[in-house]
Image 1 (cartoon, helix red, strand yellow):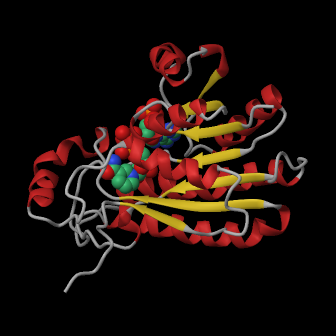
Image 2: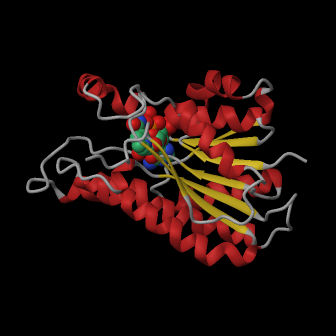
Length: 255
Ligand code: NDP
């Protein structure tokens, strides 16, 4: 029986790499994004060799109604949810110093990145709690946060706070859901080549060249997807609330 995985932001960037990896590992992928179905059809065919095996739900994760619909449509179609990957996220539309940041930008980033994580996880957890164990788990939830959960960038404070919030949600849900056989983990990417970083390529090229990252290259979506696959596997059954840094060793403090 195929496991069912919801991947938010699953048709682009890091989320697309995750969707492809999970599909190749045998999951029935339900990819979520804001674009219309016709816009993402070619991508859905890339995700799975059998496009009928990949579902798409057009939804905005910052909308409460849409979050409920993501869960109800998935359960209606497949009867259960084995894996939720909370990947959808946004950077501030404009980078502004913390002393100039506007409330609108704060609300946009926190709503999309953190509030959606809190309440989509809540909806999915309620389904997982009520479903029978499949293989050895009742479910797995994996949050894509960022090195920004710990690293200060004073020109995008709302993003850093949004990701630090996701780290605490990982801890809270890991604690609350462990008794049900539901595992919660976090993957913290560093600098990954996607649309999100396309406006700062020059800056990161220079940082890589200067030796800031011990593994001196850009990260790719596949690097993040590999970490997701490890947490999603049935191998880590005495481990919850953990994170993997996928950042080329950027988290290592040096003297
Ligand atoms: P992209 O900008 O390339 O893609 C963002 C994805 O999120 C798209 O698939 C988009 O789908 C989806 N998305 C955004 N807002 C919403 C929304 N309101 N509702 C539904 N889907 C939404 O970003 P990345 O692939 O680079 O980033 C993916 C995740 O990884 C994010 O959480 C990001 O913060 C995190 N990350 C990225 C890093 C990087 O260097 N790239 C580093 C650290 C963390 P669509 O446009 O179709 O709606």
